[in-house]
Image (cartoon, rainbow, N blue to C red):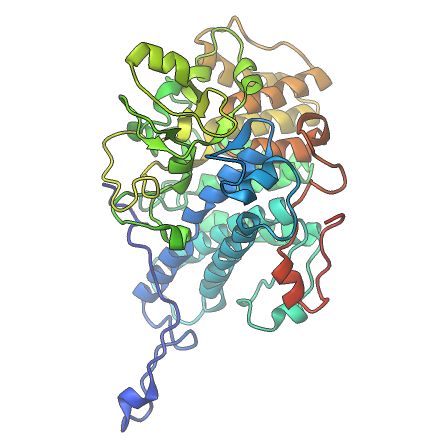
Length: 486
């Protein structure tokens, strides 16, 4: 059981007592958003609430992987979670509950983080600068997810969104959204500790790495290389010696983990409120259908890797069997049994399928404690390599790329010696191998202009972003236009 900063993160931000219960009291007693933030614990509790919306990012990872060429939607049938199936086939529309959830949950995160920033000057106390910096990181994190998925989005830097804003605040251009992300992260970095004050909270390197990633997505390679190298040169992180331990319970919050979304099996959950779960919902959805055997628990067989992703690994690459479980080979080895679901490929996302030994209170498929490794040191090395290659520093780019490959193969015989565009191709291919199953592939293909060539059904000029939910367009009363070709 984890006992980290995020456990029990359920905060009702606005509580207003009924006047009838306090007749005779003058003034009427109330706690609401305008008279909150009177003590340090108020800020701390609000920060916990802002962190809490990281847990629903399980959907961003799961659906982002399904959208790529790494996996198929899977599940029980072609109608099982139809929103997943539509994204997998690139036939999704503005009426898609799963895409709509990403919009709703990420904007809830933005609003909770902004709530703290709106009242940041109300009182002073020791440690407030750290809290404000973490709130800025969280808002940047949620806005980065939103801009990746939807392109232009409404932003309101100084205050929370309020009812009616949808009729007056425009969807800001992508450049303005990134400017806010950069501003929040640059303001946060000086006040974040190199070592987070508690497990699960944001260290300085997480903000630097996210800033570098934001620069990379905008092809600002010089700035990306600079800030990502600051993380590398800090000496605070390293590649774990054995890749196979990273995604096991003992590997959580390890030396190569810059930022993790913390999950727990200590509180039950149900399908009526998936975003309420303290567990990693994606793990149960990824799990082996009707499984009986050692090491793993069962699940719903969504997000199944395809043969081509499995075959992309070179012989001797230790990452393949850690990343992708060959269920037939596993059953032959262990005597395990399993069922087959829709689009069964014979493969599972081993990084994020359930392990035995968890409490799994409630529905075991909804309360898995497996943390999501949101920002890994290997990712930073490969992003830095890409940025350095783009700015002509191939020697350093190769070094970072080969650091990742040497761990994968356990030798230097597989080092890459290419330069220029060929080196870039190797770096992008390495990102797929290192990060398969972690939700990055679709967005890497989009930002590098390769999605139409690699993803079946992908339409250039349309599928680079996802549609704004239909009801949001309706609520805006014509203030927001739908993304092109939706």
